[in-house]
Figure 1: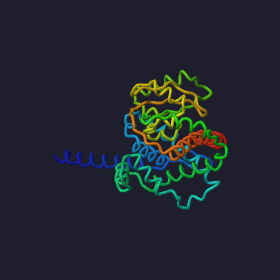
Figure 2 (figure 1 turned 90 degrees about the vertical axis):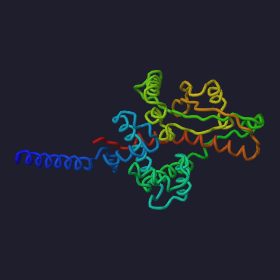
Figure 3 (figure 1 turned 180 degrees about the vertical axis):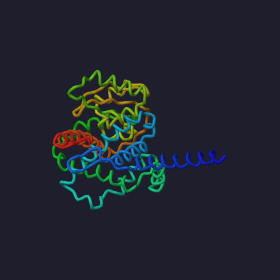
Length: 311
């Protein structure tokens, strides 16, 4: 009887030791990457995984090693941007767009206010201040791209005016998602496209966007929201009009890679056109489209000159 009690006590002690040792191992900080003079640790990667899962819950269905790769790519991109931005901005200063950025962020996740977002993030053990830091990096990056390339943006206002004049009282709106991908030196377009298609079949479009897309929309599963036909160029609109709901375009070559569009839904909308106001919106959309292309080109250029070492 005494031996049984003794064995039970020993078993409890051993279990406690093993659990304690496991927790200590989990909390141990390990350097995973060095990027210039900055480092990324296993804790950074774990937090990025939780962040991406909060933005796209379906990522929990993909293999852990794939989620880790997505998190690594995402964090490395963010760190490279911050290193470049530090040459031009003081990160200790508050962003003048902080409140609006946060509002846009939680609305995109279908929340009504900051408190709802905060409660949601707590489920993933995420700190709202870290999210604000991420939003600041993206905001300053967009500001930098605007300053550097705004003069190179070319807007054909006459073409946009003609397009607006030809619009009917009822226009089509499309709920769209995208995957913008690159072809590396050792890759072929057909093979990469087949790989993406297979991943869409196996894991869904959102997860494939997280894995393959180089667009900022990738963190939200490639979702672009509702876009009306006045905001789309003719060639893209032509391809979208060939699709049925949930169908994809074939890869379309664009300045910074290849684009796959998914048609999620479609609806008609009665339109009361304020000509000048609508034209302004069309000009802004076209300017943003071109600036996004400059952004990717500039990022790839600076990345080539950044020291990255995996530990």
